[in-house]
Amino acid sequence: MELVCPAGSLPALKTAVDNGADAVYIGFRDSTNARQFAGLNFNDKRAAEGIDYAHSRGRRVFCAINTYPQPDGWEQWKAAVDRAAGLGVDAIILADMGLLDYAASRYPDIPRHLSVQGSATSYEALSFYKDNFDIRRAVLPRVLSLDQVRGVAKHSPVELEVFAFGSLCIMAEGRCYLSSYLTDESPNTRGACSPAKAVRWQETPQGLESRLNDVLIDRYGQGESAGYPTLCKGRFEVEGSVYHAIEEPVSLNTLDLLPELQELGISAVKIEGRQRSPAYIADVARTWRQALDNLARTPGMFTVENDWRNTLSGLSEGGLTTLGAYHRKWK
Amino acid sequence: MMKLSLGPILWFWSKQTVFDFYAKAAEWPVDTIYLGEAVCSRRRELKPDDWFDLARDLKACCKEVVISTQTLIESEADLRRLRRICDQDEFLVEANDQSAVQVASRHHIPFITGPSMNIYNVATLKVLAKQGLKGWNLPVELGRETLEQLISGLKQEGLDLPAEVFAWGFLPLAWSSRCFTARHYNLPKDNCEFRCLQHPDGMELRSRESQELFRLNGISTLSGSRYDLMRELPAMERMGVNTVRLSPEHQGMEEVVKRFDQVRRGEVPATDPLQLVEAPPCNGYWYGKPGMDLIG
Image 1 (cartoon, rainbow over the protein chains, first blue to last red):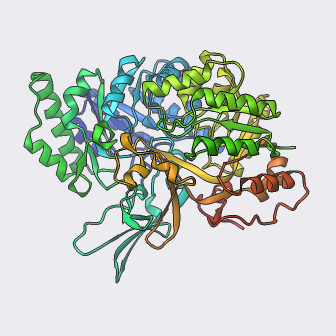
Image 2 (cartoon, each protein chain N blue to C red):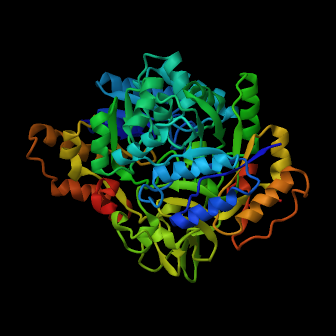
Image 3 (cartoon, rainbow over the protein chains, first blue to last red):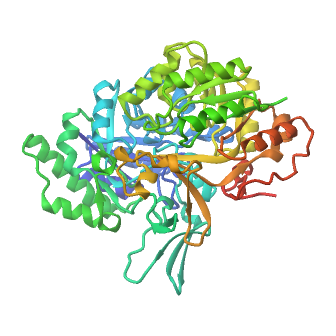
């Protein structure tokens, strides 16, 4: 299984490569990708340097162009595909059907990966993307249980990549409009969920409040650790009770599932987090590299070592991790 | 004149409630009715054959009927239901996922895409047209400007693909493998006791300042405010929108349909407010603003 790591900057890319990533995924410095953050991502010059760095060490670079262009953005998104092709990336990660069609007809030789934003959760959906755009690989949304991943993998016409570690989306990706309902930006339109520009922190007599476009997302009592106000991870009131009505702020961690993922024939595990620092990327990449190497050396004998677990817990939201939907209990 | 449609029932209602609802809807001035379970695989008060029987009854009442498919397809059982829906040649299908597009096109069944299909540009519509697309819904987060560009782009391409706009009701905003209704009751999803039946218009999720944010509806999350584009009907007509979609609610629906019908016929000014149940109205998406906003 291949280890695919995020890079939001050239230092992060180099760090990921140095710490064992088989492939690194990047995006351009605009809203053509699903991690549009101020100061993050690559211009063409930096991207070329990064691609050189990775290629000279035998690693690959994927470019994510995985938001959905509207008519007035079509030329810009198409140009992003042209730029990625010109830079010599090893694959383009796409979600929009129109853009997939463009990439497939204009650059048939550059592999296309279906982004998680393409919302493919069944082998019929994967066949649609394979038949129409000849995708080589697809990233599965984080809503499937391991049994369901097994069902998809058994009949999949393409390679599969699954999320292994990082922030957890509990909604089917590519079809979540919660962010644009509260703010004017969503992952699909602008590559942003709960965008930083809409976030406000406020100390009040009731506690520290986090707001998104003025909507109260959470309020923290003394001693509670506050997290970024991703709107689905707030505390809300439903029928008189206040709780994390949608999801707790936890991170996905699938180290325990590695042997099963391998047995299912999964081609790659993906680390979330292009918005993360190089130091974070280093720790995560190194840990997962060790785990994958260990799995390859002693298949059937794989156990999760405590220091891997500790490292990853320390890097997780609220120090908590979950197996997410992969785990039956979650259902 | 623009057509009026009733979208699929997004809530979980008992079989009798569903039959009663459509018995009345048969008399309403709607042109198109979408039937079927679009949200949760566990909602099986009506089996596919029940839906088809209902579809034939409504067709006999001169309604155009489209069979809707599930939005989040996760299991082999979901795919079996999908194939069952596409294994017929009487009705159009509403594809709410690429799985449905794939299966429908394999069966040569023409389809309409629902609002959860990500159609953001003309190139996407061209791809789907080759598969048998006969009409499409604008994704809920897109607004007037994009719609205008899409419709004029289609014209330039010489493609006749009627556009439908979700214009009234709680907006379907997200789908998950987790069930938020079961979560509220501390029940596992697989043993949810079908609690959604107790919430025929979902469960209100409010901020701790009592702001209505969302409606929890099983595995789906809807808007907390009710989208209402009634007064945009004249603009939609000018733009060339073909169909205006109203999303079923278990109370007051007849009044909503009547009022939209009067407005499309120009009998009542579009600005006349529709006094309805408690939820606040919103229309932000239409103006390119946060969806929850109310402009004007």
